[in-house]
Length: 143
Image (tube, rainbow, N blue to C red; front, side, top):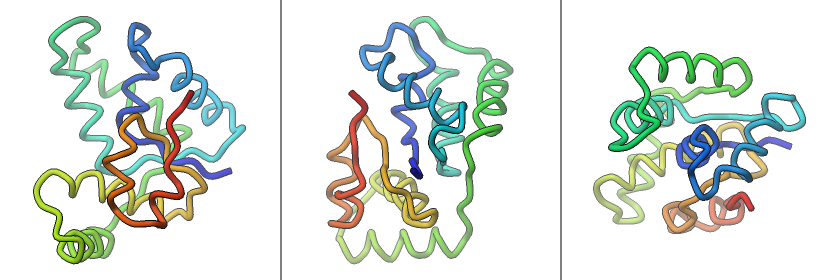
């Protein structure tokens, strides 16, 4: 099974005090153990780094800790978006008349489409279901 991890799931998986830590950690562990094929959008690399190094409370990571976390994830989560993918996302956003930061969710969705993911794991399903039926059918919230 091919599973693309949204940034929200990665964050919850690595923060033990997060309310969704347990199911998200289990999903990430399944990818690490090769029980599923795990994927991560290129954009999520930057988002994870940003969130983990600016959190107002513990466990705020140092830049080096965040880099190490991402390097570990990249050992079992494949990542790939190219300019043609960004162009497709911009066209989709224009077609759907969506503005602003929604483009970042659309980039993550594009990564799921590119790898023909069976599931797009997220804690923010409404961010993705608005991107069309194909994406909406992939969306799953870890429980």
